[in-house]
Image 1 (cartoon, helix red, strand yellow):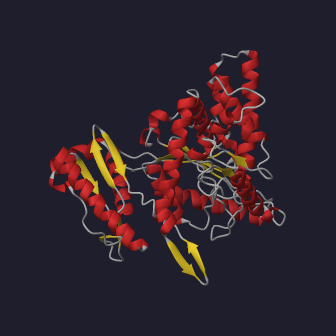
Image 2 (tube, rainbow, N blue to C red):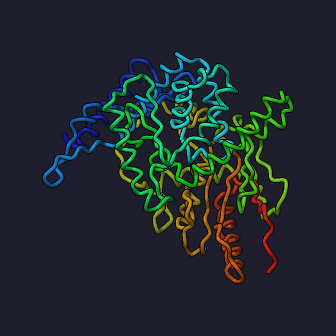
Image 3 (cartoon, rainbow, N blue to C red):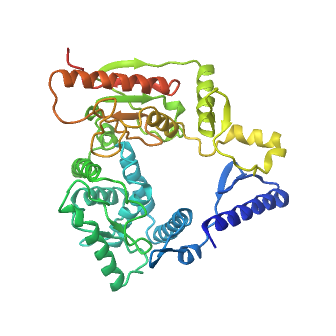
Length: 446
């Protein structure tokens, strides 16, 4: 059974599921080729189908060998289901595990590093603290667990040691040998180039012995060093606050504030236009530097910009400027005949609409050669400017970094001009979403 046949069979099942939920239970559903979105009780649930046999039976001939090729959707769903099941069991054993994970995620997000270290990776790192607490006992409070998380990030030898998280004790001696062999293979390139180690953070589990699920491409070596440096500083401050029994809220807030002076430019976003503004701990403000530009639109203009931005991601424009579908997709929507009910639901809930990710995607489309989430700068028509986009759903700022190598004379002036051109494009794309753009460091006079 080929990949196409399996996916078509899944689509047929999804259509039947949507029709059944709608006819038997009166639920509002929207079925597509990939999933079914069910609206009920003010929530939206996305249903996907995992074909587990496809994980073992899908093999394709490559030369003289049979090479297993697992469909990416099945592989991702399988990894997530295994991970969720294990984490749920661990939470039952250690009730304080959840609060520690939430603190760790808050800290990573506050330092604009959520694109580098995913949520699942953070959950595994915290799980390791409970499974391997020696020479201590398992954490019994949120602060203790959070402090150990910071010290694990800053003190663990990520370059020469794999972190094995065996939640259910499923790994045998042969499995551990396999993990060790995979880790050694991944570090062979370290002797040749210390900057291009992949994965830089090797997290092995029973369902992922090659660290392919959550840390395959990120964090990179430079991002991991930044994580370790921030974690060391935060751990020292947290330990000091604990010892001195500090109750000053400002001192505690410093743990979740990142230094914005490290960036060449800061793009501040309107807080009330983030997906989850109530989750933002502290408004992102710049108290020093130069205001490059400020943007203010009326509500009407904002709505027009948001609607056009959403349509651009659903439809494309041809050379005549008219709207047309990006790809031909058969009409799989079930609930359109309940138009009045669906309209009422859509006004209360928008599924997967993330203006921040759309904005970052639009910036990448405008200058694809000058945006990089890795450590090395990229040469382009903008010179050697690097837009290092560090963002999270609930962070109201985007940091932009330039190259770190020293420049003199005309090269430095040209780079500053290129940075202003990039920032101008960013401001134009983000009308209605971008609040202001700051330069923490004043440009040198020409």
